Image 1 (cartoon, rainbow, N blue to C red):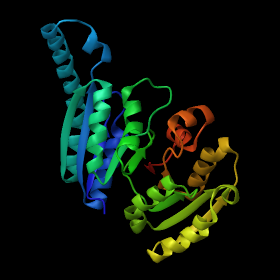
Image 2 (image 1 turned 90 degrees about the vertical axis):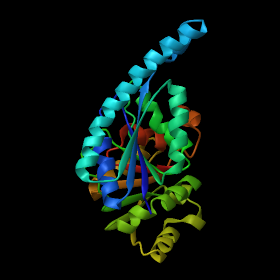
Image 3 (image 1 turned 45 degrees about the vertical axis):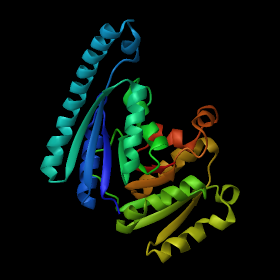
Image 4 (image 1 turned 30 degrees about the vertical axis):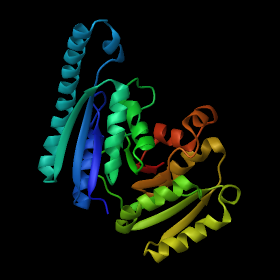
Length: 278
């Protein structure tokens, strides 16, 4: 069950996709929705001067301005949440990026689901970094909403990206509330014969899901490593999928940055909401 949701409302990027997505999602599940927004204090501000009182005064002034930016972002969310008639609360934070990451990452551990905006390639913004950190630090599922998304959120047709890995298994379990409400589910494998252990084959997965009342069609694809992500997204468009489910960062982010990785590629170019678990 999904009854308690956290959404991160950005202050440095367009917030409408994640506002519309999270509010409609909470309404659909009858869930409570907490919104957190971070106004960032430049790291240099905290160290620009020496001397206790002077430093404290400068930092506090910058922090108050940062909180004001966060509160301004939350007014947009609050208006939509009120109109939707959902249970909600807001929290504004003013902090340097490292402290913001630590605080929001810890908060997310209490929730059934966290909702964040897809990082946007080429944008220099701390709001680009926080969603990835929530995925790595929350210990739970994170729904990435594409920056091109236009609400409301629905998950009638769900695609399960299956490679038999631990992260994929975690994502599958975390997606159970969505699968229970879906009209159709597809299991998507890429290069299954080479990459998926027989014990967790797509056929065995389909049998497992059937015992939970979820019928799934298996679609096997072939692609080179660099083409896995576009191949999945092409299928998602052809099949009219509303939601993708996949494991996040099966390898370290350092490995993915050098060798390429499906998680990194999907975060850069996703076209449908994607539920990830790490």
